[in-house]
Length: 106
Image (cartoon, rainbow, N blue to C red; front, side, top):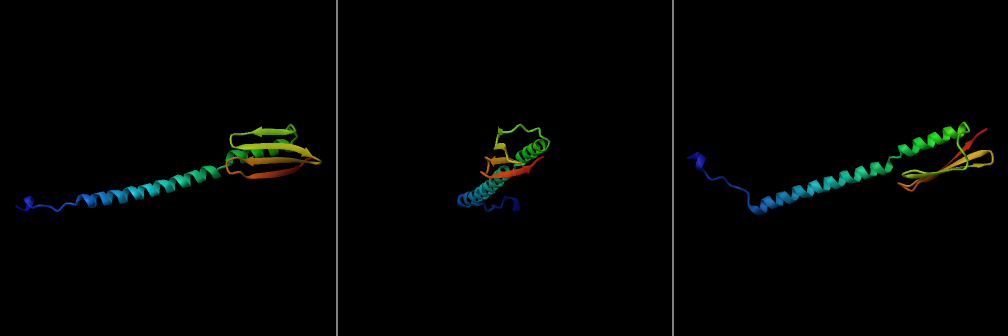
């Protein structure tokens, strides 16, 4: 007769409350991961840094045609000769940063 004993079950309200808590926890976790992923994508500028290094190399050996202008997928790069030096202006379109590189070439 022990097998036929009635087991207590959770009420509908308790089940719905537990479900809502689980959904809220997963929603917060999902939003957190999404935010972390987007920030890492925005901060990734390896392609831009590689292109700038390539242009510095070309400039150092006189292979960069001046004036130079390039629009990449996430950047704008321009280079010009100013007196005895070359200036490379870089604008990162992902995060809005701009910086200038001055190279003294022979």
